[in-house]
Image (cartoon, rainbow, N blue to C red):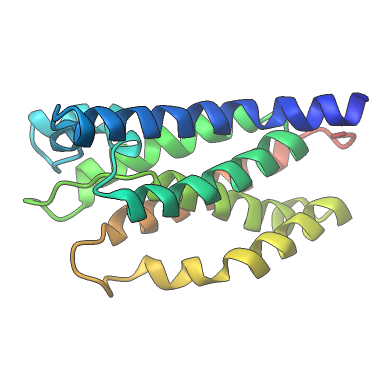
Amino acid sequence: MGASKSLFSSAVVPFRFVFLMWVAFCMDFLLGFHLSNLGITPRTTYGLIGIATAPLLHANIPHLVSNTIPMIFLGGVLFYFYPKVANKVFISCYFFTNVMVWVFARGGFNHIGASGLIYGLAFFLMFFGVFRKDMKSIFISLVVILLYSGLFFGLFPTIPGISWESHLFGGVVGVIAAYYFSKSYPTSSK
């Protein structure tokens, strides 16, 4: 009973976030609110709002679905196995990735979608085991690498119209967070 409650509670934040993504999508496309205009437009005053809103906004159903499944899985893994730092990692990957996109990404482009956050979470999970060097964390890292190794291809400008910068900066933030939190994470984690 305790394990199932913990498994359920670990999915609360990712499911809430996905719910907000779907609500924003419905408001944008079904009700015509044009929320997708509130993405990150680098180095513009108007684009600053995207630091808070961009991960909730998606261009179309395939974009939304392609971010929904990894958000639930990676977020669930993060909150289940690393509950003591999960909130800090999630917020760091959300905020710092978007700030880096606003500062460094190509201008004249509206960056939207949760993929930067997803890259942050994935790279955190991939590298946390490398830095911690304990068997559980290494195993989790290997599983995430096996399932999400294709993310490495998204770090480069291969497909026009895709914010590869969000992917790259999300990966960078994830690795930095893995290093930072691995130094202070308690030995008896679960």
